[in-house]
Amino acid sequence: GIAYRGKSLFECNKELPKAPGGEAALPEAAFWLLLTGEVPTDAEVKALTIELHARSALPQNVLATLNTLPKDTHPMTQLSICMLALQKDSKFAAKYDEGMKK
Picture 1 (tube, rainbow, N blue to C red):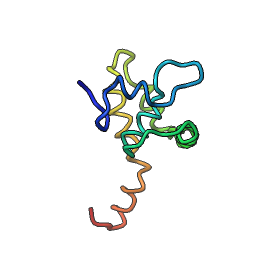
Picture 2: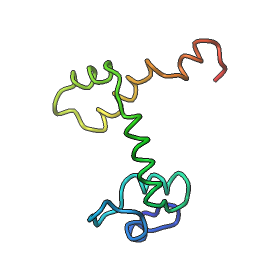
Picture 3: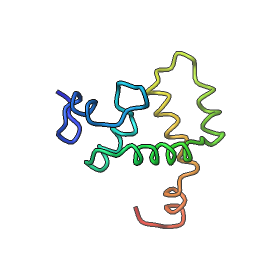
């Protein structure tokens, strides 16, 4: 079956922090585990959630692009299109334009 860093999904759900009163592990906890290989503490998950929320603003051009798509566009297609639309504000693209080698 599926495993994250050697832990089964059952083990992950058992070991990872949950929302107060929740039964399922928080997505941020699973993300932490995937990135670090460590089971996060409640405080680490809370700090990560705050950091992700602080970075969650979308540029207006991305929202405009999303709003022009047909309503029945598959969610993964929407995600792909919006990810490509983020390139306009990419720090990497700006550096490449300045001559940084890829």
